[in-house]
Amino acid sequence: MLSTSLSAAGSKSAATLYSPPNFSGLSLHLFDSQLRLPSLSTRRPCRAVVAMAGTGKFFVGGNWKCNGTKESITKLVSDLNDAKLESDVDVVVAPPFVYIDQVKSSLTDKIEISAQNSWVSKGGAFTGEISVEQLKDIGAKWVILGHSERRHVIGEDDLFIGKKAAYALNEGLGVIACIGELLEDREAGKTFDVCFTQLKAYADAVPSWDNIVIAYEPVWAIGTGKVASPQQAQEVHAALRDWLKKNVSDEVASKTRIIYGGSVNGGNCAELAKQEDIDGFLVGGASLKGPEFATIVNSVTSKKVAA
Ligand code: PGA
Image (cartoon, rainbow, N blue to C red; front, side):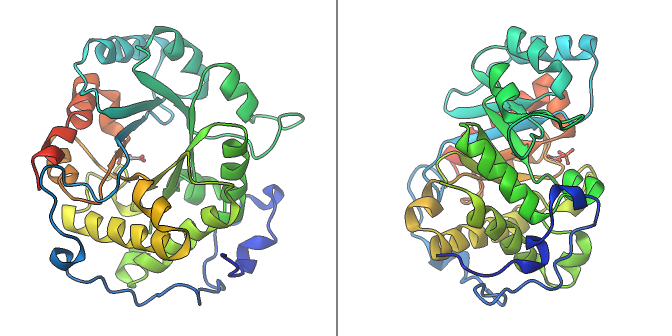
Protein backbone atom coordinates (compact mmCIF):
# COMPACT_ATOMS: atom_id res chain seq x y z
CA MET A 1 0.00 0.00 0.00
CA LEU A 2 1.49 3.28 -1.04
CA SER A 3 0.26 5.69 1.54
CA THR A 4 3.01 8.29 1.56
CA SER A 5 1.46 11.73 1.38
CA LEU A 6 2.32 13.82 -1.62
CA SER A 7 0.62 16.79 -0.09
CA ALA A 8 2.76 19.39 -1.84
CA ALA A 9 1.27 18.33 -5.14
CA GLY A 10 -1.94 16.92 -3.70
CA SER A 11 -3.96 20.09 -3.45
CA LYS A 12 -3.26 21.32 -6.96
CA SER A 13 -5.83 21.16 -9.68
CA ALA A 14 -5.73 21.60 -13.43
CA ALA A 15 -6.40 25.28 -12.81
CA THR A 16 -2.97 25.68 -11.21
CA LEU A 17 -1.18 24.11 -14.12
CA TYR A 18 1.25 26.90 -14.56
CA SER A 19 3.00 26.76 -11.21
CA PRO A 20 6.32 25.01 -11.59
CA PRO A 21 6.53 21.62 -9.87
CA ASN A 22 7.84 21.81 -6.33
CA PHE A 23 9.46 18.74 -4.89
CA SER A 24 10.80 20.39 -1.78
CA GLY A 25 8.01 19.57 0.70
CA LEU A 26 7.50 15.99 -0.33
CA SER A 27 7.47 13.27 2.23
CA LEU A 28 9.85 10.63 1.06
CA HIS A 29 10.08 8.44 4.09
CA LEU A 30 9.01 5.32 2.21
CA PHE A 31 11.90 5.69 -0.18
CA ASP A 32 15.41 4.72 0.50
CA SER A 33 16.81 8.02 -0.63
CA GLN A 34 20.31 6.81 0.04
CA LEU A 35 19.80 3.85 -2.24
CA ARG A 36 23.08 2.40 -3.33
CA LEU A 37 22.92 -0.42 -5.77
CA PRO A 38 24.88 -3.54 -5.26
CA SER A 39 27.44 -4.08 -7.96
CA LEU A 40 25.64 -5.12 -11.11
CA SER A 41 27.60 -8.33 -11.42
CA THR A 42 26.10 -9.63 -8.19
CA ARG A 43 22.52 -8.52 -8.80
CA ARG A 44 21.41 -11.25 -11.13
CA PRO A 45 22.92 -14.28 -12.68
CA CYS A 46 24.01 -13.60 -16.24
CA ARG A 47 21.53 -14.94 -18.76
CA ALA A 48 22.55 -17.04 -21.66
CA VAL A 49 20.93 -15.40 -24.64
CA VAL A 50 19.16 -12.13 -23.97
CA ALA A 51 20.46 -9.29 -21.80
CA MET A 52 17.09 -8.43 -20.37
CA ALA A 53 16.17 -8.20 -16.72
CA GLY A 54 12.50 -7.63 -17.47
CA THR A 55 10.22 -10.04 -19.24
CA GLY A 56 8.48 -7.52 -21.52
CA LYS A 57 8.97 -7.16 -25.25
CA PHE A 58 11.44 -4.51 -26.45
CA PHE A 59 9.52 -1.26 -26.99
CA VAL A 60 10.52 1.70 -29.15
CA GLY A 61 8.48 4.89 -29.39
CA GLY A 62 9.02 7.82 -31.73
CA ASN A 63 7.94 11.12 -30.23
CA TRP A 64 7.54 13.52 -33.15
CA LYS A 65 6.74 16.41 -30.79
CA CYS A 66 5.50 19.58 -32.50
CA ASN A 67 7.23 18.81 -35.81
CA GLY A 68 6.17 18.09 -39.36
CA THR A 69 3.88 19.12 -42.18
CA LYS A 70 1.50 17.03 -44.27
CA GLU A 71 4.30 16.71 -46.82
CA SER A 72 7.14 15.77 -44.47
CA ILE A 73 4.92 13.33 -42.61
CA THR A 74 3.91 11.64 -45.87
CA LYS A 75 7.62 11.06 -46.55
CA LEU A 76 8.33 9.84 -43.02
CA VAL A 77 5.42 7.39 -43.15
CA SER A 78 6.58 6.11 -46.51
CA ASP A 79 10.12 5.58 -45.15
CA LEU A 80 8.72 3.72 -42.13
CA ASN A 81 6.53 1.56 -44.37
CA ASP A 82 9.60 0.65 -46.44
CA ALA A 83 11.85 -0.07 -43.45
CA LYS A 84 12.64 -3.59 -42.37
CA LEU A 85 11.77 -3.76 -38.69
CA GLU A 86 12.58 -6.64 -36.37
CA SER A 87 9.33 -8.42 -35.55
CA ASP A 88 9.88 -8.88 -31.82
CA VAL A 89 9.64 -5.18 -30.98
CA ASP A 90 6.59 -3.10 -30.07
CA VAL A 91 6.91 0.01 -32.23
CA VAL A 92 4.85 3.13 -31.64
CA VAL A 93 4.94 6.63 -33.15
CA ALA A 94 3.42 9.77 -31.66
CA PRO A 95 2.56 12.34 -34.35
CA PRO A 96 1.14 15.76 -33.48
CA PHE A 97 -2.63 15.45 -32.88
CA VAL A 98 -3.58 17.07 -36.18
CA TYR A 99 -1.70 14.45 -38.20
CA ILE A 100 -2.78 11.33 -36.30
CA ASP A 101 -5.57 10.58 -38.74
CA GLN A 102 -3.26 10.97 -41.76
CA VAL A 103 -0.64 8.71 -40.15
CA LYS A 104 -3.15 6.13 -38.98
CA SER A 105 -4.61 5.75 -42.46
CA SER A 106 -1.27 5.47 -44.26
CA LEU A 107 1.15 3.75 -41.85
CA THR A 108 1.74 0.01 -41.68
CA ASP A 109 -0.35 -1.55 -38.96
CA LYS A 110 2.84 -3.04 -37.51
CA ILE A 111 3.39 0.36 -35.92
CA GLU A 112 0.87 1.63 -33.38
CA ILE A 113 -0.11 5.25 -32.85
CA SER A 114 0.38 7.21 -29.66
CA ALA A 115 -0.81 10.68 -28.75
CA GLN A 116 1.59 13.09 -27.06
CA ASN A 117 -0.91 14.15 -24.40
CA SER A 118 -4.53 13.67 -23.37
CA TRP A 119 -7.09 15.46 -21.25
CA VAL A 120 -7.43 14.39 -17.62
CA SER A 121 -11.10 13.39 -17.76
CA LYS A 122 -14.01 12.98 -20.12
CA GLY A 123 -14.14 15.58 -22.87
CA GLY A 124 -16.44 18.58 -22.77
CA ALA A 125 -15.92 22.29 -22.26
CA PHE A 126 -12.12 22.22 -22.21
CA THR A 127 -10.92 24.56 -24.94
CA GLY A 128 -7.87 23.33 -26.78
CA GLU A 129 -7.77 19.90 -25.16
CA ILE A 130 -8.10 16.44 -26.75
CA SER A 131 -9.89 13.68 -24.87
CA VAL A 132 -8.94 10.05 -24.45
CA GLU A 133 -12.27 9.13 -26.07
CA GLN A 134 -11.37 11.14 -29.18
CA LEU A 135 -7.93 9.55 -29.34
CA LYS A 136 -9.44 6.10 -29.22
CA ASP A 137 -11.96 7.14 -31.86
CA ILE A 138 -9.17 7.91 -34.35
CA GLY A 139 -7.28 4.73 -33.57
CA ALA A 140 -4.60 5.77 -31.06
CA LYS A 141 -3.53 2.98 -28.73
CA TRP A 142 -1.11 4.89 -26.50
CA VAL A 143 -0.51 8.27 -24.94
CA ILE A 144 2.74 9.83 -23.72
CA LEU A 145 2.20 11.45 -20.32
CA GLY A 146 4.49 13.29 -17.94
CA HIS A 147 6.98 14.25 -20.63
CA SER A 148 9.53 16.73 -19.30
CA GLU A 149 8.41 19.36 -21.79
CA ARG A 150 4.92 19.18 -20.29
CA ARG A 151 6.29 19.15 -16.76
CA HIS A 152 8.84 21.92 -17.10
CA VAL A 153 7.60 24.07 -20.00
CA ILE A 154 3.83 23.78 -19.52
CA GLY A 155 3.99 23.23 -15.75
CA GLU A 156 2.08 19.96 -15.25
CA ASP A 157 2.62 18.53 -11.78
CA ASP A 158 2.83 14.96 -10.46
CA LEU A 159 -0.74 14.80 -9.23
CA PHE A 160 -2.23 16.03 -12.50
CA ILE A 161 -0.07 13.65 -14.52
CA GLY A 162 -1.07 10.74 -12.26
CA LYS A 163 -4.74 11.57 -12.79
CA LYS A 164 -4.26 11.72 -16.54
CA ALA A 165 -2.54 8.34 -16.49
CA ALA A 166 -5.33 6.80 -14.42
CA TYR A 167 -8.02 8.18 -16.71
CA ALA A 168 -6.29 7.02 -19.90
CA LEU A 169 -5.65 3.53 -18.50
CA ASN A 170 -9.21 3.18 -17.23
CA GLU A 171 -10.45 4.03 -20.72
CA GLY A 172 -8.13 1.49 -22.35
CA LEU A 173 -5.22 3.55 -23.69
CA GLY A 174 -1.68 2.40 -22.94
CA VAL A 175 0.44 5.00 -21.14
CA ILE A 176 4.08 5.85 -21.82
CA ALA A 177 4.77 7.32 -18.39
CA CYS A 178 7.77 9.66 -18.49
CA ILE A 179 9.96 10.58 -15.57
CA GLY A 180 13.41 12.10 -15.24
CA GLU A 181 15.63 14.45 -13.31
CA LEU A 182 16.91 17.91 -14.19
CA LEU A 183 20.65 18.49 -14.44
CA GLU A 184 20.58 20.36 -11.13
CA ASP A 185 18.89 17.36 -9.47
CA ARG A 186 21.60 15.04 -10.77
CA GLU A 187 24.34 17.39 -9.67
CA ALA A 188 22.78 17.62 -6.21
CA GLY A 189 22.68 13.82 -5.93
CA LYS A 190 18.88 13.76 -6.10
CA THR A 191 18.38 11.67 -9.21
CA PHE A 192 16.80 8.73 -7.42
CA ASP A 193 14.67 10.91 -5.13
CA VAL A 194 13.21 12.83 -8.06
CA CYS A 195 12.61 9.74 -10.19
CA PHE A 196 11.06 7.80 -7.31
CA THR A 197 8.77 10.71 -6.43
CA GLN A 198 7.55 10.93 -10.03
CA LEU A 199 7.16 7.16 -10.24
CA LYS A 200 5.25 7.07 -6.95
CA ALA A 201 2.78 9.64 -8.27
CA TYR A 202 1.89 7.19 -11.05
CA ALA A 203 1.85 4.26 -8.63
CA ASP A 204 -0.55 6.08 -6.30
CA ALA A 205 -2.95 6.88 -9.14
CA VAL A 206 -3.04 4.04 -11.63
CA PRO A 207 -5.55 1.18 -11.47
CA SER A 208 -3.08 -1.39 -12.80
CA TRP A 209 0.37 -1.63 -14.38
CA ASP A 210 -0.74 -3.86 -17.25
CA ASN A 211 -0.62 -1.17 -19.88
CA ILE A 212 2.17 1.12 -18.72
CA VAL A 213 5.65 1.59 -20.14
CA ILE A 214 7.97 3.73 -18.02
CA ALA A 215 10.20 6.12 -19.96
CA TYR A 216 13.23 7.30 -18.02
CA GLU A 217 14.30 10.53 -19.70
CA PRO A 218 16.90 12.62 -17.90
CA VAL A 219 15.94 16.18 -18.78
CA TRP A 220 19.56 17.16 -19.40
CA ALA A 221 19.74 14.57 -22.17
CA ILE A 222 16.55 15.51 -24.04
CA GLY A 223 17.21 17.26 -27.32
CA THR A 224 20.70 18.22 -26.19
CA GLY A 225 22.77 15.60 -28.00
CA LYS A 226 24.14 14.72 -24.56
CA VAL A 227 23.07 11.11 -24.10
CA ALA A 228 23.29 9.35 -20.73
CA SER A 229 26.08 6.79 -20.76
CA PRO A 230 24.88 3.19 -20.87
CA GLN A 231 26.07 2.85 -17.23
CA GLN A 232 24.22 5.98 -16.09
CA ALA A 233 21.02 4.82 -17.76
CA GLN A 234 21.36 1.24 -16.49
CA GLU A 235 21.92 2.43 -12.93
CA VAL A 236 18.67 4.40 -12.89
CA HIS A 237 16.68 1.71 -14.73
CA ALA A 238 17.82 -0.92 -12.23
CA ALA A 239 16.86 1.38 -9.34
CA LEU A 240 13.43 1.96 -10.86
CA ARG A 241 12.88 -1.78 -11.22
CA ASP A 242 13.96 -2.28 -7.61
CA TRP A 243 11.54 0.47 -6.55
CA LEU A 244 8.69 -1.31 -8.36
CA LYS A 245 9.69 -4.56 -6.70
CA LYS A 246 9.68 -3.08 -3.22
CA ASN A 247 6.67 -0.81 -3.60
CA VAL A 248 4.39 -2.53 -6.11
CA SER A 249 5.20 -6.20 -6.73
CA ASP A 250 7.79 -8.60 -8.13
CA GLU A 251 5.52 -9.30 -11.05
CA VAL A 252 5.12 -5.64 -12.02
CA ALA A 253 8.86 -5.07 -11.60
CA SER A 254 9.71 -7.81 -14.04
CA LYS A 255 7.00 -7.28 -16.64
CA THR A 256 6.99 -3.46 -16.87
CA ARG A 257 9.10 -2.13 -19.72
CA ILE A 258 11.50 0.63 -18.64
CA ILE A 259 12.67 2.48 -21.73
CA TYR A 260 15.33 5.17 -22.02
CA GLY A 261 14.93 8.53 -23.76
CA GLY A 262 17.28 11.46 -24.29
CA SER A 263 19.36 11.95 -27.44
CA VAL A 264 19.08 8.33 -28.55
CA ASN A 265 20.25 7.96 -32.14
CA GLY A 266 21.36 5.38 -34.66
CA GLY A 267 24.92 5.55 -33.36
CA ASN A 268 24.40 5.11 -29.62
CA CYS A 269 21.34 2.82 -29.47
CA ALA A 270 23.19 -0.50 -29.69
CA GLU A 271 25.38 0.12 -26.62
CA LEU A 272 22.38 1.35 -24.62
CA ALA A 273 20.26 -1.62 -25.71
CA LYS A 274 22.84 -4.03 -24.32
CA GLN A 275 22.10 -2.90 -20.77
CA GLU A 276 19.95 -5.47 -19.08
CA ASP A 277 17.39 -3.09 -17.58
CA ILE A 278 16.93 -1.04 -20.76
CA ASP A 279 13.83 -2.44 -22.44
CA GLY A 280 13.70 -0.02 -25.35
CA PHE A 281 13.70 3.67 -26.18
CA LEU A 282 11.64 6.81 -26.47
CA VAL A 283 13.15 8.76 -29.34
CA GLY A 284 12.61 12.41 -30.23
CA GLY A 285 14.77 14.02 -32.92
CA ALA A 286 16.03 10.76 -34.47
CA SER A 287 12.47 9.46 -34.86
CA LEU A 288 11.87 12.08 -37.57
CA LYS A 289 14.20 10.17 -39.89
CA GLY A 290 12.68 6.85 -40.96
CA PRO A 291 15.88 4.87 -41.63
CA GLU A 292 17.54 6.03 -38.40
CA PHE A 293 14.42 5.22 -36.39
CA ALA A 294 14.46 1.75 -37.97
CA THR A 295 18.08 1.32 -36.83
CA ILE A 296 17.01 2.16 -33.29
CA VAL A 297 14.09 -0.29 -33.42
CA ASN A 298 16.46 -2.97 -34.72
CA SER A 299 18.97 -2.40 -31.91
CA VAL A 300 17.03 -5.18 -30.19
CA THR A 301 19.44 -7.48 -32.01
CA SER A 302 22.40 -6.23 -29.95
CA LYS A 303 20.42 -7.05 -26.83
CA LYS A 304 20.02 -10.62 -27.95
CA VAL A 305 23.73 -11.27 -28.25
CA ALA A 306 24.86 -9.16 -25.30
CA ALA A 307 24.72 -11.61 -22.42
P1 PGA B 1 15.38 13.47 -28.04
O1 PGA B 1 13.95 13.51 -27.30
O2 PGA B 1 15.55 12.05 -28.54
O3 PGA B 1 15.26 14.47 -29.16
O4 PGA B 1 16.40 13.82 -27.02
C1 PGA B 1 13.50 12.45 -26.52
C2 PGA B 1 12.15 12.76 -25.94
O5 PGA B 1 11.91 13.91 -25.58
O6 PGA B 1 11.28 11.87 -25.81
